[in-house]
Length: 336
Picture 1 (cartoon, rainbow, N blue to C red):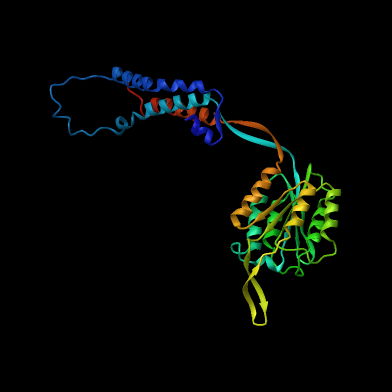
Picture 2: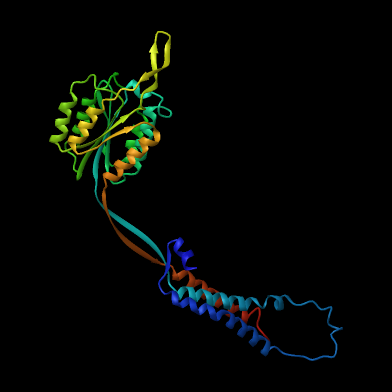
């Protein structure tokens, strides 16, 4: 019973009073015994002359008095056990981490070596990562031939997930400006207040454009002590790419080209780590590993509030007892 009450956040301040319920069968027996002992007895030789007489409704309903007494007893016992409704208030003190996701959205991210394609897989996995970091501030930078802050760092994860859902290839001029993607992400973290500043940079290509070259962006990241995790996304060998031709958009097998040396250098010199994602499952595992590496310290102080619930039981017991007394002295009153 106590476990059932705990399921609904109800506890008993004095549960030992529940042992009194074991007396209930004895009390019921005593009431029945007393009624039979006090009942008038008339001995006759035969009942043939009174068999046709129907039993009065007062006689049929008289056991109601014993029911009311039993209910009053149970209600008073529950009231003495003092049921209480618990309400827990939690104050969360966290040392959050400021994270910026820097995501390549160039045309090559539509390659179908991931399901349904690279960019959709990246978005889906990033959303799961956001859900796993409730105490952190997270921002989003997208880049192709240029870079853009899709969402500044925020603790409102509903906002960041909404912005992730709107990401698609073609929002920016095509190309792969890895330096711009990294520099913009670091700039978002320049004034961050978290105990740690992290960039997760994902790309499937080689830097071929942008106003900031990758080496300069790396030096900026090191100057602001930003740790960079880099992810090269793409299968080994070739992948199916959508290609614009004079006859419209067509799919062609093309070689996968990722500047792994550059990504490894960026992660190594900033204290991060480089990963190669060759499929959906591998990408998810990479994000899970980064989640484990970048732990957030959370301290929770819980305060319990109790609301007394004994009064309804005491009131119900009193009503049942008064009803039994009134009925036994009026409707079910015995003649002297």
